[in-house]
Length: 322
Ligand SMILES: Nc1ncnc2c1ncn2[C@@H]1O[C@H](COP(=O)(O)OP(=O)(O)OP(=O)(O)O)[C@@H](O)[C@H]1O
Ligand SMILES: [Mg+2]
Image 1: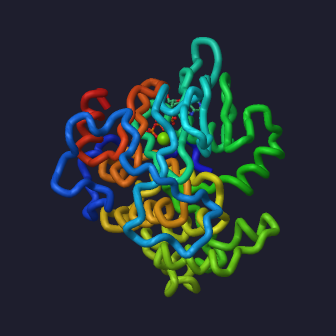
Image 2: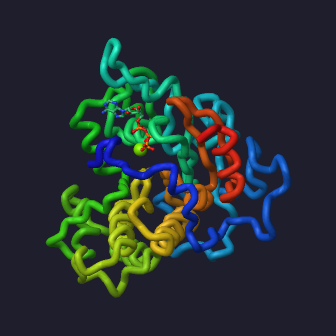
């Protein structure tokens, strides 16, 4: 696992756009003023959650579920019938003690809708990785609660958390974390096999097609490009059909084209498979692939945008001093 400090991305990445245009970028420029904030999507038809039947719906499927009215950033007071896939309620995280204490999170309440792609942005040190690690059960909170589906993970034992991460959570990190001696296919199947589960054949095939790895399955990581390796890492996360995939700077080590590819199929996994994704990124273009962007500053949620575009994200970052 990467430590929160192992993330070398800096705000300089803000100026390096990806080439590919995200499929949800509005045609013809900026959306109307006021269309971004706190407004439910016009077509909130619900995508099925991660266990949806496949094959996928047609490519012109409606905008995915945003099953919550953002209120306290989709936190505890959220409306609507469906509970979020994962949520933080008043989460604080303090590293160290006394004079050396670092308040990485200060009372964060935020929910992440099922079947939606959410980006978390904010300046370096604002608490993005810490929040993601707390949401994923990789780190404990100092105060508050984290709910993953119907489970309150806050009081879970290490063993329970290990099982939860194994069975219900997927990870994609900046470093691809593939085992070099295994083929792409073996890497993709490994977590399920370690868990004593077997990938459903039809689902495995579907994932492989979505990530476009059919002709690379027998290659080892060293025989794959960076983008292909990250696609293997994404397929490895997707194939287990986790409740949530957490991605921390998944495009941080990729060039713009490979980054666009990875982002494109992360989006496709949300649209076509109903996957829930929470992604930390510094890049406004990467964030614009998401359905929603949540902004952190100094360990607090300070803003959010629905249906982001690179321009609206960049403007918001500037206005937040990020
Ligand atoms: N294990 C730790 N021990 C002490 N302080 C930590 C630890 N992990 C994170 N921090 C501190 O908590 C704050 C938030 O860190 P975090 O890694 O969550 O930020 P970030 O928003 O992900 O930053 P970046 O964009 O640089 O990755 C920072 O001040 C960081 O130095
Ligand atoms: Mg980080």
